[in-house]
Image (cartoon, rainbow, N blue to C red):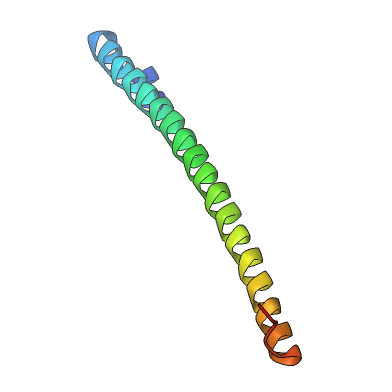
Length: 77
């Protein structure tokens, strides 16, 4: 596209260059938006992963307690 702009003459060249610049700005904007979306997704992943790990650890404690109770009999209350 840039080669075509370089080959154009006069007003046509100005118009082509303007369009190339607009497309470049749009591309830069899309790159920024993609980076922001990636950061947000990464934060959500971290939060979700931590929540899952906490729930998993809590489940393990309950499962071990249930297994212990099964082997040893119900604890007295």
